[in-house]
Length: 132
Image (cartoon, rainbow, N blue to C red):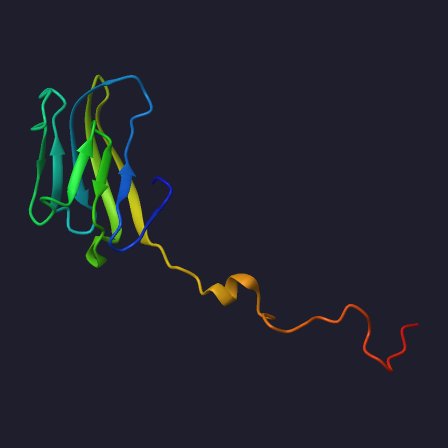
């Protein structure tokens, strides 16, 4: 499984499933791993804008660049989870991969700046304490 990808609601996110070896890709398919419902099928043989078939409900929100990059725009709440890709190659046959799309959680600014926000830390020991 690839490293998880973090996405924000309403923004664009790209998931990748690249074959490392030098092979000829004849077909790729993206699905949701939990349901195996097809999202998109890509055929690189068609050198036009019609080389990908996008399924409902992803029409007008999903695109594929080359065979390996699935872009979701805009990300919706139901898009988070595991995605599976299957790439049919020659001479290696079918190869599979997974990518997990996680929700990007914006952290509270105060948490980023530390718990002691607004509290001055003394630069010297408090008066009356023995420093020896």
